[in-house]
Image (tube, rainbow, N blue to C red; front, side):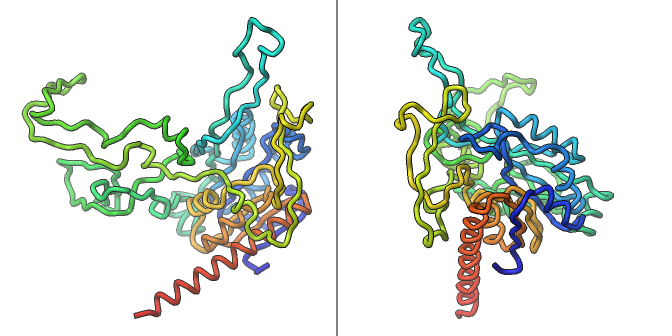
Length: 388
């Protein structure tokens, strides 16, 4: 493995304590949710403040932490992060349509309660956005450490219609919508929309939750009938026909989207491994337990046997959002290496910590494949740059 990637086998608290303070630019991680998922011992509880305090110590001032969590235990995760000394800055919601409920069918035993269960279908995961306190102002901190700010332009969402533009105003300010009657020069750009705290998987089920959005308002003008204001500004009054701004049919276009990890993504770089049986099941109370019939679970075969693999594209986006160019991304709960893959593909250095030896070897192979992919892309770019 190249020196830009360092993988540690061991307990994250022990490894973190051996690392120098103020030595990494960002932390992007998918820690245990405390749900005992599939009966895994490592998912028995969420990481406590003691662990997050060590993460805080090794982060540079102003460095960001992005930590996934479960909806049922997010409060404990966020409180532990805050108790360790972090500032909670936001929460990103990753919405998807492929979740399945862990619900107990009450009607199986009580006929009069047919159709009643105990849980909703999971359809999103929260990501806590936290920051180590700054040294001085944001500007001073960025100048001193390269941390403290988010990579807004690097994570903007492509505008699918050229009539929908971001705006760059005087003094470097950016505006995401048309503004008229303002002072100072403003010019439209094709940078795309400002990154939001919603990410979705682009599935039909999720898109159905977003409204149709042929612009942000209906068409106005004489041929569209009179419009009376419901606020304090009075009637619209005469005005020419004004069509709405059109993107696509759904307002979801304004958000970054990323589906769950595909089989090809999970197993990328693992051609040398044999597939193993991977059985996933659930009991009615949401905990893990072997079902009476295997048909109650999902019996598949995988090379990557980690049960909660995050998609590489999502981790690339998150690493890019909070890491300055050439920075170090730390993942103290590396699992099968999705954060490492994202970091390497974005050109960052990476430090990963994992206590399961099998997962470390899977992560090593997946990250190595990503490094080869990044090197090939760089060579291809050099080739095109040198072509007249």
